[in-house]
Length: 249
Image 1: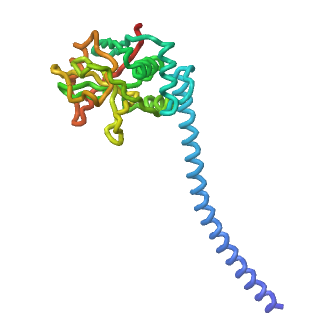
Image 2: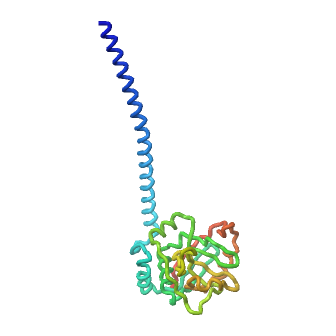
Image 3: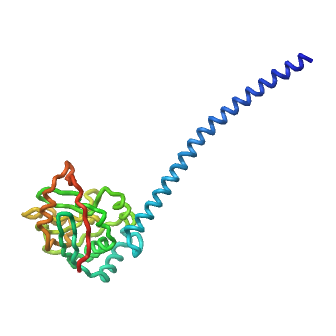
């Protein structure tokens, strides 16, 4: 009888030890899987937060009349149509240094309509004069704020074909759109960033490279003030120069 009890006790201990090993193995696997699942859940939460942020920014800063995302496939048709319904040609850029009034040219219909459209969508109100090249240009329409990136995402990813106006040069006060310098043989304009020529003798080496779509008619002294602010090594002003833009007429 004692032998049977001893044998039974030994079997029970062996069984328990095997079960513990398997249990520990399962716990380790569960922990690993749990970490992976936890990471996935965290990512999902982040994505959800981003989505909510996007909706919040969109509702707060983007007009409800955005028709659709602009792209190279639809931007030309849309902007030409938009320009016929929105014929304004005078825009005011407001900064802490004062106002700059820009007269837009009807001879560059895509660029004029694009600028009016972005102003009315309040795109520029989240941007800065972010580049000050001393004695050369000041450049606006970009920033390091999330709202700006969100607005670009909402409006669309597109470029504009050049619209050269015969005889028009990069005189002092000329306003043109920037362009990508890489893989852009036709010098298409980026729609969001513009620059004002500050150089007293003009910047004629840029002729043919950019589309000039307007000129400063008031506030060139303000542009000069901005051109003299302290900048870092990348020509970014050390203090942000915020922009507000409105259509005057």
